[in-house]
Image 1: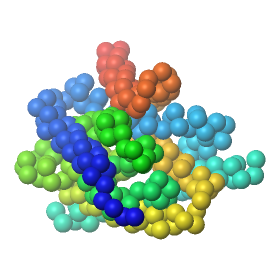
Image 2: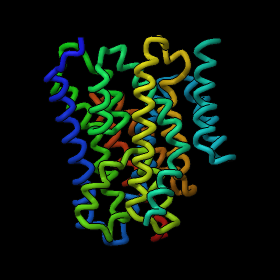
Image 3: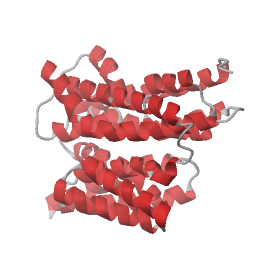
Length: 102
Length: 227
């Protein structure tokens, strides 16, 4: 059963090399022009949050009303407690409950 | 110096717990796709990028479409170019060797925690390394646990486990909220992401929406300075 598949090894190698190259080139190339304090800095400062939002917003909407409710709860909990893990747990609980009982 | 490694590791433990949780979801999915444990382990070590691994596992089948899967995974990981670029302030005083060594440990989580900390503290790349290692272990053990639990949990979605990933990234994004001036860039990001996700094939929408939103932040910032 556990026969080694060349194809899957090739796939993993390609994605690994590509991913590492992206990480390294971003870091190395940026140092050429990030020294100024202007627009590029504002741009880079906003990348973390916008990337995460872009990653999750479509998934939240696809989850429907429950996704939106769970997200609003995350907003409220983060505002009150700033506790990421607690916010996540409550949101997952809401989704789980809705899938099992509604 | 060593303190930065330890602090980074510790600062990532809360997030590491949720990484463990959705790592176990990936492990469960792997068993359902017939992916071997060594293949999962190789992905964890050498790719080390959660969302890309999720997509790879999702697209995995007995007749592997290497080209499509590679493209899909790398498109998702395009954001690591931006992640790498945004980490430049952390590495200003580092040698090339250190850059090559530590940048592999920049995951969504360790990077977000690092950026957060970098805003009000002076830290070295060791903070990122410690955090990345914390995420690496929790991720690795989570996936392995899920792999063995896979036979028992036939339906992880029933427990909302697939939403853990969404919830954690959303909470992380909110933790970076700096004030009202972020609202418009964030709305633009969300809108572009939703529209492009609908109209574009694949995952390119993530990168485009993030660039659009950040560009919007540059514009609103300029307006504020001029006005």
